[in-house]
Structure formats: C-alpha cells, structure tokens
Length: 461
Image (cartoon, rainbow, N blue to C red; front, side):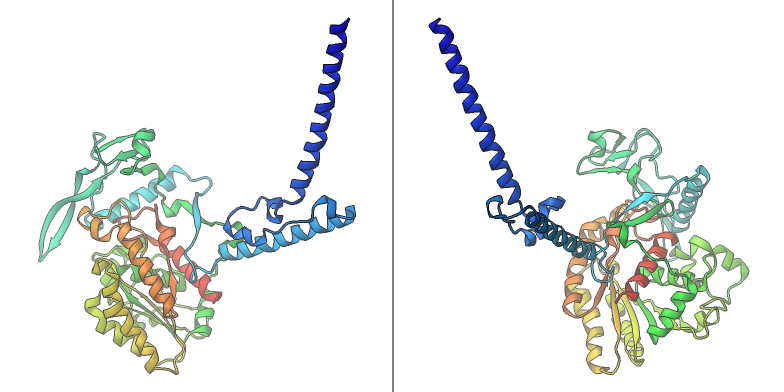
C-alpha cells in the first residue's frame, strides 16, 4: 500500500515539473522570436543585411496586437527596400562593375546545329594553323601529350608541339587530369587542381547569357536604334588597341550594317576575297584581318552602314596593339579630341605579356594627359579589360598570358582607370569557360554579346 502511494507522488511531481518546463519554454521561444532582426523574416543573409539588424520590441513591451502587426509590416517594408538596393547592385551597369551571370543551354538544340558549330570551329582552327583534331586518340591528354601547331615565319612554315591535347566532351571520358595526362570520368579525373572537364566548356552559339538577377536581362536594340543613339550621343567613335579590340569593333560593324556575312569587310574587295573572309572568318587573324574595314573612308562607302538613318556617326579602329605603338595611339586620341564629344575605346595587354605598369606608364597615362590639353572636348573613355583565355592557348604563352596573369593585369588596370575617371568594361566573367577557337579569340556570337552589353551600358551612363 505504501509503495502505491510513493508511485502516485512521483507521477504527480513529474507531471508538475513537465508542465512548468513547457510553459517556460513557450514563453522563451515567443520572446526570442519577437526580437529576431528584421532581415531574418525574409531569410536575407550576408554582411550587407547587418545594416537592418535592429531589434523589434519584445512581447512584454507591446501594448496591442495591432502594434505588433504594424512593427512586422515596417520590418517587411524595410526588407523590401533592402532587396531593391541589392537588386540595383546586381543590375550594375556593365561599364561600372564586372558582369555577373551564368550561361544556360538554349532549348531544342538540334544535332545539325551542334555539328555546324563544331565544324565551324574546326575550320577556324585550320585557318589559324591550330590542329583540326584536338584528341590524342588513345585517352591521353594535356600538356604531356601536345598536338602540333603550324607556325609561319619569314616565308618558312614549321610545326611546333604546343597545343595541349583534349578529351572528347561527347565521350564517356570527358575530363583530362593534366598531371598524369589521361582522360577519364568521375571525381578523380574531373575535380582536382589540374583537372579540366571538357563537357563543361561553353559554346556561345548554343548558350544564352543570363544575368545573376533575372530582372536585369539585356534589352537588345536593333540597327536603327543603335545608329541613332550613337549619332546623337557622340561626335565620333574610335577604337584603339589589339586584335581583341578589333574583334569588338568588327562585331559593332556587323551590327550597324545589319550584315553578319560581309559587314566588317572592305567594300572594294573581289567577290572571291569576300567569300573567303565572310561570316566567322571575319574574326580570324590570318589572311582576312587585312581585309577588314577599319578607317572611316572604307566604312562610309558601305551603303548598309546605318542605312536607315539620315546621318551616320563616324567610327574607326586604329591597330596600336602594344606599347611599341604608343605614339600611334597618342596621335589617334589627339585627333579624336578635336571633336566635342568623342567616344574612345582603348585596350591592349597581350602583346606586352600583361605588364600593367609598362602599359600604364608608356601607353595609357600619356593618352589621358591629353584631356588636360583639350579641355573643351568632353570625351567618354572606356578601357576594355582583357577577356579570359581558353584551353587552346599555346603552351608557350600560358605562363605569360594565362588567366592568372590576365586577372592580375585587369585588377591593376581597373584600379588605375577608376582613379582617373575612366570607365572599365570587364568581360572576364563573361568569357571564362567559353570556347575560344585559338585560346585567345572568340567568334561572332560572343563578340556580338559584348557589343550589346557595351551599348546597353552606354545608354545607362
């Protein structure tokens, strides 16, 4: 009988302790929930959100349910304002900050379209002297098993083994582990410091660039709109630099002539020469680059150039591709500053092995000093940072012109330009991981996107 009462007492005591625990826990949870920072209601994370880290009144200080609701609504409004500010930063003008986004494969790509892209790239490599077949043929790959590149010098032709062999992206072994020189699949071959997954290489012709925030999508303008914009906004448009800048310039010409087939070529060429250099061959630096229209006299003779507008803006390109040609660049800028509102694009680096100090001191700084002389001119000057290099970059240039060197060069140039009121167009993020037919240059699709982004940025200045 005594044991029975002991069990009852223990049960009642346990029930009392449990009930008190539940009540205390509920009150504590309600209290801590009410003092959460406002930004946590929307699951906003990151250091910038700390600016909104203020505490809401606790339950004990809230006089009514309506007051509690009002405070939560104020918190929501503050969060929405923060989101808008964050979206504005993510939608940053491409002339004011590096582009952020991703590539997404277009829908319903046919085998015919894929084959055309692969065949075109093979033809471009052949024109450049790069190997048409990029595979070693026995699952060996990388720098240990290089492929031959054709070199011409002083009318002499030779072959040099300095193109790293690749793995077939459409095979069951798409990844090259360069340190051992073999193709394979799985984490050991695809996810290491020396690994390269060729299945992840992007062909710009088959993909679409999507900004980090969907609301920041690019508004594509057509020939007439862009011709009118450039003519009304600028007295002249001048490009100065190397082949990377020339390709951007040629792509602008294709757009302003609405002629992707022949739009960047001189008009006085024979039909045979035009047909040899048409389409993608307008972006190959071999026999065709000397056939491109680069001066205003050649361009204005093209009846398709801004044909839908009454007046046509004067545009030109000067090939001052390294610091050895700084005097030519100086003369070109000086001529441009004779006009009231010139637009000037400048970009070099690769031919100086990305020596930023040399480029600044002997090339860019003297050009910028001209602004102090021609004070009545109101130029817009844009520095074109170097885009990313691809796997087909010759091995002999990878140490001096690889992506590590490019990034360091771009950082120094960006800092200098920002300190001197120069806009910077940085396309490194845009081009990283994108297929380049020779490791340095890109075709019409990528260059056309760069032009559209440039025009988009100019409109928002």
